[in-house]
Image (cartoon, rainbow, N blue to C red):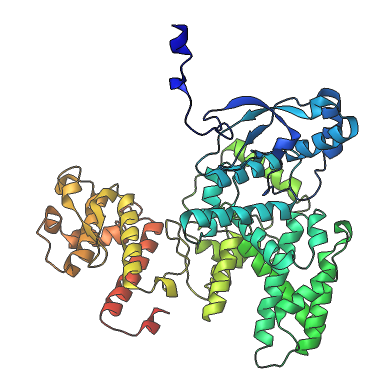
Length: 553
């Protein structure tokens, strides 16, 4: 038996493995500093502001938790998986200073390299650095740009800012799309000129101000430099001016940059400095309105009592005084005390101005809006050479109205250029028809169509026989059926709605009954929507008949 076991038949013939393969699951192990390397795409470039505090803690207590490490396939050195590069640098310093083995041999948690390893590692480092010590704006921006590069390599196509924001959020680093836009501006235009200021900790708000200033000045330069001979282009001028202020971030002033930039632009464009500065300020305001975060829409405030005929624009609209329920005593008391606190010198018995009463009479139901939406509408109108209807400016010399809804109405007649197309008109017409039918509880009977006026009335959706419906429901559906049925490409089959008499319904529906005018008639809001529906329907028919689009305004 011993002889058989000692025979050479069991000799090993395969090659020796140079090294063991990495574990395929999370595994605790001890590695030395010689085996560890910092993550080469670490977004932190500057010294961690908490470096000294972390070093003192590690010197006294060691590492509280083993850092997570990983290794790229085919490489010999381990790298920090997410965060921990500051701790690795501190351990190297402490080993150099003390030669204490606890700083050289480090308990770690090995995690296998994932399929999307580079992206997972980068987003992990971004998230960890954000949580511990924070990154400067430019470090965050460079990390996001590196992530963009990796994502585009992965997908093989360029990414939009919204898609980049979505992917970063999905991989554990949530960020807003607007921030990505500012970060790209900082990397592309600011970093080459003021690296010391940016790495010194220039904050997001100052970066935003510089981005807005650059865009505003570039727009003015393009307008005024057209046809003129200038010594340099705007990008070179902006870089040259900005580089003059690349010093300590604490001493950096956006206003000083603006003064110098506007001064040099005025000299090269041969324009008065004050005139140019005013233009820059106006363009900056528009850029901020476009780039600011949206604010929730608010209805027009309640109209306070006025003591003079002149009223600020912010108080020029309010909720309609008609059809409003009387306020409760508690609400009245609270409102009165609030008004007195806000304006103690106001004469609460002063009569409203005639202009204010006329304004209130034209507001059927308030249309919510925001400052940002109004600014965008003005800018689009400026670019197209149009005029945005101004309800408060026009109300005393015209007859515009205001009615809320999915498509708020501020002028029954005016049709915006973006709406002046058959498919868009049909969408609005169908919505107004549905909202009118909703007043009678029959919104489900109105169905949108791609042809005709954009909607049809479906009698099959009625909850009861058409003749047994309340008068308002019968009248509204009869009117909508009469307006829409004759414009379909194929004649619609007769329905119970066609047997109702429009002659009996039209007067009471639009005007009211003689003895009780407010009953069974369309509300003021519904009437305004009907007027708008008719205006858009007429325009739709004109467009499809080839009538010139100038009739829209």
